Length: 487
Image (cartoon, rainbow, N blue to C red; front, side):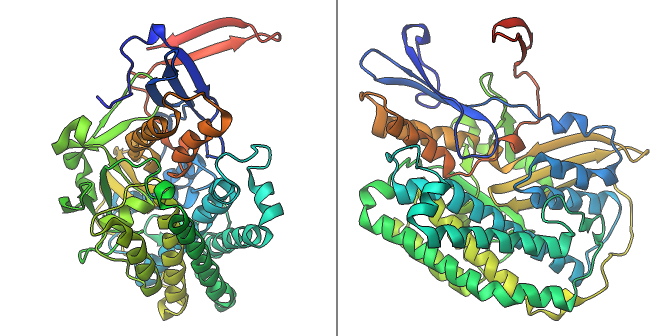
């Protein structure tokens, strides 16, 4: 069991709660148990909402799934649609995608990377980085950033807008589009649309390089803080091409240990259950996956920007690879594990995605009209996996003879990072809160460790199992009228 996960005598301790955790997608809280000397005995990140898509998707026709699962989230709907449609390509019996269809899906996905990462860095994380972790909480937000750093705030808005326009051109809408369908895509790209995206891509690349320089200066100015904040050495996982390059859209699973040594490599993601195992704990609605061969205590792992750019052999675009190498050089030949490196890696990924967008816009296939693959043998079980902005995203489905979904298992990016986030906040609690009077600024340090992972908490809670579910009815005066629990 992880240190600080469960206190020996919780009944003797006082409880401090961060409820809700702010500037994240979804609803969660952190509880700390402290003794009279402010020594910390327990720290937990609780996910307190329950979505249940794994259950209510059952019985629906399989062709509805790619559109339905987008409603998991308004921030990363493209990722859920693509993971689901990759599974439904197989269920419907389609063969390999046409070059145009695959490249259009990739274009949409890279647009998703740009817009989602931009939202997180500029709107959610930059108030802490630019205004200070202990700054006045009434100004520690995007409005405060806009007042003090108007050009940076403007760039963040326009970067996100650019990513959303890329999605719109391919999917038909900025949010909850329908561009990807089993077997391919349903819309060709026009020359006008291609040229509109190409017009601004160099500006997006330049702004991202400037943001990377800004974050690098923060680390250089105060390495004793930025390089070790929330440091928790864990395993790392992501999707890789056969040559070891990171691939956001398709690849095989690679996991490395905290020193960067390979645990497994080129594992077909359809076989994910052979290498990963899911567990539940009674104090959270989010599952705890781990690497099966290492067990629950040592097998937890990280996904997302910092994990996958370090698990990868290289990034297949030149500017992003240069920036990746600069970040990794701070580890002196070993992976870096400070939680705030996630922001640096996230910006490197925006740059990588923008370079990929530029390459695709210059590819003649992107204007093709052959959008659908050939039909082949129908299947009744399939797995679709993609690298979502927050990390590796698994969609696993079984379908019956009547085309109805009979089984759905989702391991969402944030779920993969569940234990990693708990480890990070426990490290921060030991670093900054243990034995000290608790203040709002110090509690914000805990939230900063969570924000660095950019969790999408609403995306990540879908299986009930043995986790408790409590429904409370509160009257008009705020008094508890009745309560019903399911163990």
